[in-house]
Length: 81
Length: 403
Image (cartoon, rainbow over all chains, first blue to last red; front, side, top):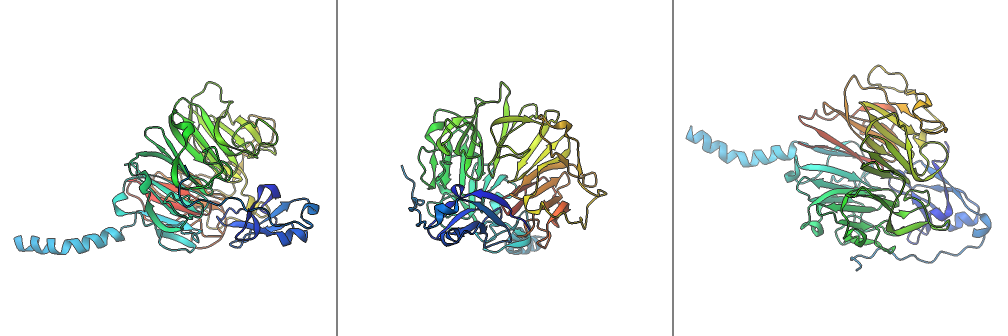
């Protein structure tokens, strides 16, 4: 079986809750790859809900000793004016 | 006579209600872990389940929009119901809860909504007065509000207050709007060209709507978005596509007229494929990405077809190789509506039969298993007395009797 798709790391979103970079999976869940995976040179992001996986394109040197990205502002529970 | 009538009247309310609840008119199937099946649960289902739209909506649903893991139903009275994943506020109920049953969007109760669309984690609602309301994930600017905030209540997009919104179509991380003055606007992720030309190479998204040029003088009648793809149909049935490559290898940041010899009436976009309905014939372009390496021999094939037949590239408007494929006809039945999830497809025929094909791992084909199918397969639903609508979200499918 081959990868569902190939995605650049900059198109993935850091998810602080999952502690992983994520990208939408066609099943509705998220492909995930952890910072630890990236430090180890792993290129596969898996979806916990299905058999599909992604190839992640990134520069290994950028992640050799990478820290968790800054937390992006989350959704606000009320409308922001 | 009188006694019998009285007896009948006494018995009627209970029986009547029971019958009404039992009579099925809206169904869903496929991935359900975020409540997107609207059946009250959080599980996948491989066969059609009753979709719990209120009984007062029966015969009044005009459209259902499916997103990544949420859905929006619009009634002919302009009411809106949402259900499924709410983690980014995409349900518009003012919180971030997942809701496993259709829930009335109270915020919009004083508006008559005329068009809705669902993206991966965002939602849009256009009103009869031409206003546009958006909610959900805004991190790519896909709400068009001039910032990258997410919103859990529908928020009016200021850019459109002095313009009249007719239609909208939301993709994974972008949004398209068709205005009454015939212009098409885009906002959100611009990485694959899906919202038109960027002003600089470094621009990855924009959070304020911008007009997409390149349609000439023709009248645009509909717009479509899914994944990183965008498309529009003009009054002659000519198709324009832009964004991530559906044909050939290259993304396009401006509308590109394709298959000019076809007069297309309906379009449904997936993440790597699209369906085109033209003169009663159904075509697909692109591929079902997940099964590109294996083409299982079709089992339980409907009709007399053996394999999908690739047509020559004579329809292609460019020099690149076309992948226009004709979907085999279904026992001479007319295709009246098409829909596409990320990697599966669905259609409904003139007699109300529903067919599905493509990726089936979550039961999104509704055939009772998780197999993939390369040609349309009949879903076991009661025959509809009137017209039936078919709609897809990423990994799920919804069928609703419209009258």
